[in-house]
Length: 266
Length: 202
Image (tube, rainbow over the protein chains, first blue to last red):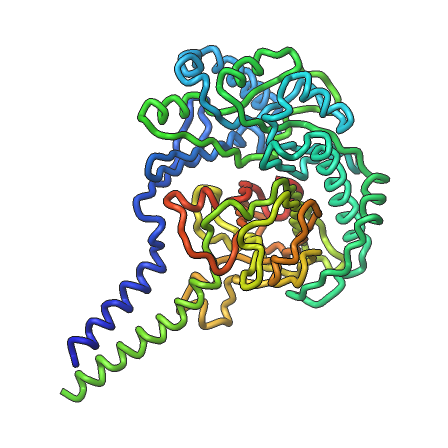
């Protein structure tokens, strides 16, 4: 009898420990790695995969334009320095964060993307919102599948962003949130009104976008005169790719303001 | 002898109680085992403002559209977005910068499950993982989700600390059966942003 009790006890303890430790986290390494540009990124290694959390925010968080400019120059130069990566793994697909030379309107953006031949490759849009006399980076629209029509998706991202702006303005005007703390409501959200309000108080532009494309295409894009920067951690990709890993780059910094008003920085 | 038996019985009782409390929690936490319930396109915006009573509020709005139905969009499942606050996108340690305040959604039959640190809740001391700075907002009837229709989830948080943190937005279904191999969390993330509480944007 005692043996069964002890066995039950041991099983119970193992179950609780496994739950807290997390069975799925076994065999996974997480740490921080500095890239050649001096930026610190978090890296997760599990099985054959390496996930690089690309976070070049240190150049931006204090709003230092000089630092940002140096980062752009360093990244542009790195594409030449890592030609061997492009030559060896040029057909492999990676994610990159792309900054055009200047802000684009949402009307301009679809044809801009098509002219670059990126209609299939584009995966995300970073919006700059001009409101109260300043540009804010407030939202990020994502396209999971290229089956989603580009024009329709861009139109939707634009509209959803206006909706957020309107929702924000209406929240400011509201004397108090309609409901008690920790409550839940599904009715107090007038979509048409919020879009209308958003349109009346803000202008929304495309300030950056993300793409998923073969390295060769990313390299070619970095040379286009319309593009200020194609950002992806080339040296880290090389390091882990050469170690035989499958490398996935995930951008986690979307608050970096690279463009200034409507100036062309190229 | 009697004392020994009593001691073991107490331990078994404690272990059993822990198990009973843990297993349902593992169930409600859900599993990310497939990407087929990912929206085809989605947008995430963040606004910060001070409300008339002087509180700083951060609002995170998620818009989602599904081009096709997931295998899990049927009776018997829940579908939710988790808004999980951690130290960074690479470090899943909880970061207590927010308290959930309010939520809005046009998802059918909405559900909200607030899992946050609360010093008055003894369960947070006994089972800290149920107080992991997470709020789940979704639907109890995912079978009613319509394809090619935009759904929004707007979550209001009161800001406790204006500090850097990461918001991990993770879609999940409950219950799910198969588990994706490591690093499974990377597949489960819909989006993750290293950002700051009390500021607009990412």
